[in-house]
Image 1 (cartoon, rainbow, N blue to C red):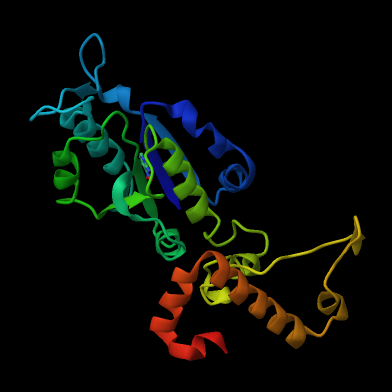
Image 2 (image 1 turned 45 degrees about the vertical axis):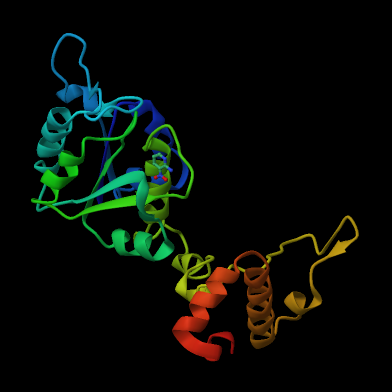
Length: 243
Ligand SMILES: Nc1ncccc1[N+](=O)[O-]
């Protein structure tokens, strides 16, 4: 999979050289390219922003700069990429959306700064490629770069071959393997630590009993901190969701 990230702060994406994503890049599983938007800015100051029409605080990133950048980046590979734009005004990032993007051959992430990007940039892009706006949550960051790091990691770990053991993605919170519930508490050696024991059932080795115990703990935890997920499961599967 190829992932391009366009930003005015390329150094913000340095973590993509590390750990899981870094290893996957070196293994040739991911082709991640970071581009400095200012490459496409003109004029002596390489300006990428201007005041918003209609007034209002702050500055907006201009269409000509982004248009030139996306023309080149999205025109530099086989086929057409899916353009993802992190923004508080986007639809929530979910495991399901990350999983759908993990099967795409090519993603481009456009990182906005300031008060955002001139709306015509996405209107124009939609004429040539699929475009999705995505939000991490109901809070405001200073720009899209941190969100781009989150999206790249959430997607990359689902790309076949990136995770050492693909089964572990199956048992993530929200994943199909946990039925969309939060994952159960987990334990490893030592068996006793500061007078705290690993639950007996996990030491017994009876897989059916362990699975049931984990399911019950997942239900408890989800009911406690994310009752909204239970409501969604009930709506989708009825009471059978909790068998
Ligand atoms: N919350 C956000 N704030 C700024 C840019 C992007 C954001 N997001 O969630 O993707």
